[in-house]
Length: 451
Image (cartoon, rainbow, N blue to C red; front, side, top):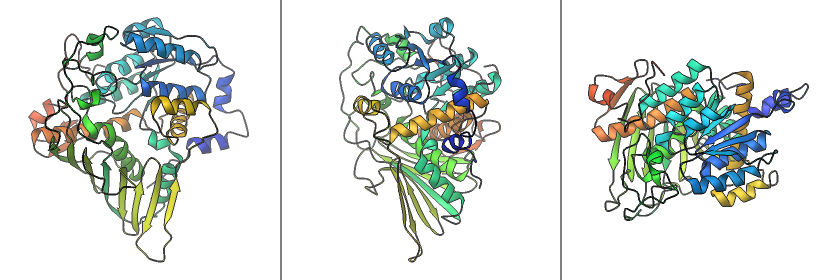
């Protein structure tokens, strides 16, 4: 196994003897940034980018007029010029009117693909939230677009930029665990019954037609917008698409794994049967890679197996077990005379006063902010070098597709053997047809061959 020789922190150190690329940028015209989906996490991404470099927040786009106006006012106070960014209800109009260097896409999952591709076609580099798509072919098309148009695309699997997890990866690849034969990923942080709120009319400040876009049209309820849309498979990919992608991506990155060759998943709504939420409250998936199996488990009910690691990844080796999370990692050795290791996440509590404000707005932990900043720095470095970032779109596609194929296996009730070259399920025409879900008219599903 090999370790990426340059991470952000080493880059800064090695560039200290001369003018860094970031320093060169400081003398140039600020990069113009547009945000599509200006909700809570979109603003977190954007405001971390501003902390890394003096970019100009040029435009915001969101179908919620009320929140959009407030977001524009907040954004004006976060960048150097103090200008209020222009606002748009349609991303196509924003991309038509604005000349943007960077576009961030932080919409619900069903709206990641089309705006990201359109931004690439408009000449912008893109930061897109995870999971990158709601079907496998969307992710294939996004990857094809990035390569065709020569765009740098960073995915919001920012744990690849977490300093404590970068250290963990290096130690594992240097042999801390010895021979590795199994990994597990889990999430037990979703809690309690979700309920059954009544259907209501969308609020007048929300363009619900645009918000729904290519997804199936559902009756509106208080969960739909804002923030609880993940309860519905029409808009997202369930807990596995929201939380597993981070952890399986960490396992793949740590162990240099590519595509799984077989995926099998079971589960369903076992406890919360009365809720109108249609995402599984219980799910297990096995991802069979050539090197080892990775097993995912989530439950919306009951206590976690390990209370210290309710959302985590575990890697088992002949020398011991590794336990990793967003806040810490541990190595528990097999040998009684070997040293147990524990490393905490970086917090940088005193470095950025704005973090304290955003911590209230976003409910993110202190450990999240430096990771997002480092991920944005990696993104900007990749743009300046016209190189692949640490969470390149292809890697985001593989990790996303793992979760999507698990959901497809659950729906079909059978194991899926995957051909990553042909991008099809081997010997299963029905499953292959389901790799692209139908779009609601007039939206057209992108074709990787013609994107």
